Every structure is written in structure tokens, then in C-alpha cells.
Length: 161
Image (cartoon, rainbow, N blue to C red; front, side, top):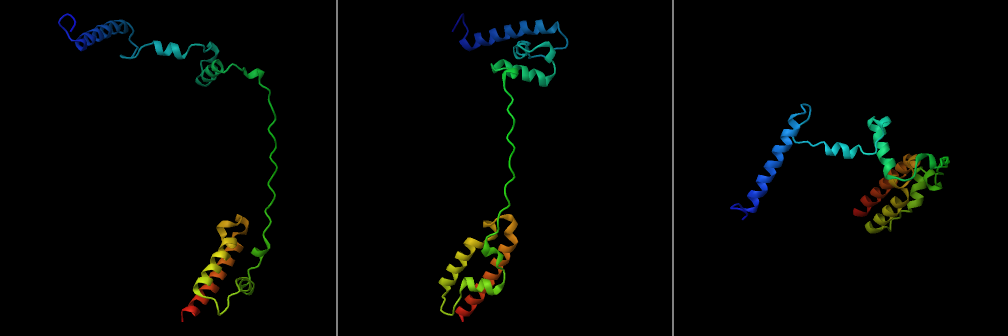
């Protein structure tokens, strides 16, 4: 305790005294907002030129103060021209959309079991699923998958009898 007060009470009195002196100084200027000091505005605007009073230019001036390289010293390099990507080439197997061709690829026989039919479905989907091919070829891949699933589903129905 200092002079009959706790440390906390003495700090509170000192803060009240400082606040009262600030209130008296701010009361003389009517356009200021209570509680804001002017020191922050001067610190932010330090180094900003009078010609750059616009907000965007002031921001660029502050950045130039932080980076030692001036804009005039930087060499302007031309942007490389991006070459257009070549059109993707459709794989040969995606061009075959006839049911007979797909049946020949699947080579479903009467000896196939449910397990072998599921393996054939997975293997066929691995190379023909529409999500795994280029967007330009998705229509053909969808047709192939639909036909393959139809053929395999029919073979599964025959196996279950």
C-alpha cells in the first residue's frame, strides 16, 4: 500500500488524472471524437507526400517506403505468351459404342460367376468411366458404361437363376 492506498487504487487515480487532462485538451477542439488521440494519424501518414492525398496513392507511397526498390529501377519483362493446349485425342476404345463391340470386350461367358462378373465390371469402369476421361469424350464413355452395366446386369440375373 502506498500512502494508505493499494497499488490498484493508485493506478486508477493516475489514469483518471491523465484522462481528465486529455479531456481538457480535447474540449478545445470541437470536431474531435472523445477517446481518440491524434498521434496515430500522424504515425500512419508519416512519409506520405502531399501529392498522394488520395487513399490509393498513399497506400502505394507507404509500400514504396517499405520496399527499397523503386518502380523506375525495375525492368519490365514481357509476359510469355501461353501456347494453346492441343486438343486431346480420343482413345480408340472410346470410339467403340456398339453393343456387340462392348460384349466382345467384356467376353462374358456362361462359366462366369458373380465374382468374375463384378471384377469385369470394375476393370471396365477403370478405363471407361466418364469421370476418368476428358470432358470431350464423356458422352461416349457414358454410352459404353451404360451398355456394359446392362450386359453385366443381365449376366448376373442369369447366374442367380
